[in-house]
Image 1: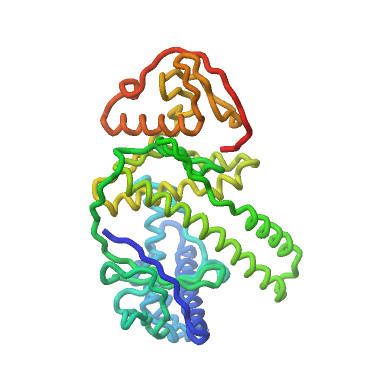
Image 2: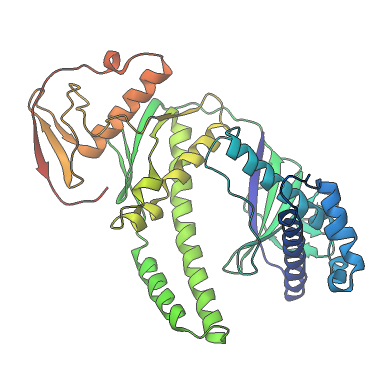
Length: 394
């Protein structure tokens, strides 16, 4: 199976100039091809990738206004057109329902200030003596944080909004065998407590509130800065660095959590959360977006393919995990977010809201995997619930 390995690179000032030219040419080729397609009248046949490459690369180089396209590798320019074709394919398959996951939108024009990228196939790069050679760029100093498991089939050079450069390799990896410690675990995702496990363990989210305050203050200053001024550009870069640091902290936390869950448990059960609907709550929208719950699910699913005998199960969002006692199975109903613990008078158990939900998530997931009804896994009986509260948002 294919996987991506990303590394930080440190190009020289001259290489940064050449990379800027490369990113600009790839962006222009993408935008020219997209503009050609948008200009085609409805009902007429669209050109193929080969025809687009001939129009926006081969013939464009003969035009004095596009002659500078000859100064960069043609491999990256061709891949830019191929990537546009893939974007259109994803859009139409998503629109017809043949593509799973979130809906793919219609391709848009690329902008200079967004993240820049250029992709090379094997005929456009090589790796020698610990340095990566890119066509018409040269050898790049690379920070090898881990060795590549196999020969890469392609590499993408990236520049983020904070001005950092990366190389992303596509390699073939083989699944490894790791003995699990537990049969399964249910995970209830939250805000202050990032994840509550069915074992009773709670994983706290790393506090990035100080960074968030700096970013919000910087954006207020950016809104007052004069457009086109050097001060505005320096503010924009400072904000981009803070946002990159905040994003890296969240990603690191989620990566470590997903790795531990998949490595230690044969089955990881998560809940299908309606994040798009939750962020409409203006009081919790920023906190929910910062938690990046969908990213945790995606990471768990990706890591489960790299280890043999691992499975990630996602239960329905309509499963009443917070409304049912995990001991006796009585359904006490919907609870306010301020309610953090529940005392069940039927069985006498005082349930922590998050732990109770994670146990119910695991029971629902295992029942679904075994083809059983949830009632056969969890007993049902009547009860009356008494509630005790303390303030915490999840």
